[in-house]
Length: 218
Image (cartoon, rainbow, N blue to C red; front, side, top):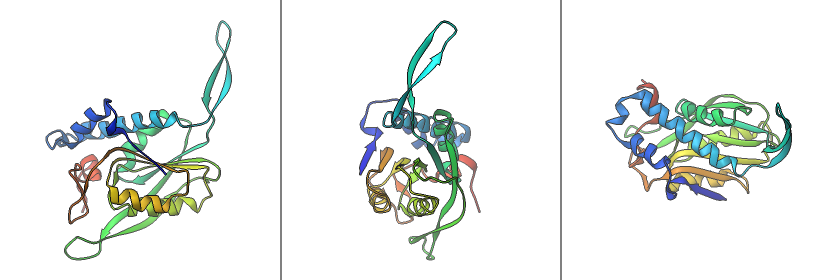
């Protein structure tokens, strides 16, 4: 199981992450969503280097040229609602990909809001059989929502490979997701933070991604 942490590399992704974490920058939802999208674009570019390629002959106005292009059949799956701008970043790079959407969200199961369960109530997906499945969700905290999403999507077929992509992950969440993934899968992170607080929010993290993108929910 490969875990790729983009924060270990010197790149502009670190600038986007610094802005996402800044509580003053977070006051502008448009800028926040745009940086989540841009991290998705950058991560999609890095992921594209791992795909299989075949040579395609292209006719220009002057001649023909052979160009290696991705050969994988891609399905990009998003965990609603926080995953939408992240998904948009991936889709702007992999614009020929099929798309899937899963509603999987955390529910506190005690009065103190320190124990979390996961509820999945909606999924729209093509078959992922023999395809490359890319599941994008900005926050990988406990790993419960991602594990539930993997289980739901696998019911549509066995993919050739699975890539799990997030903006911030915790070591605990990564271990939970590893248990849910088949051999040969990969986990991509823009950063891996040390852990979570009592309410299961990533620390230092940047807060609730869905609320920061779209406003607080009831």
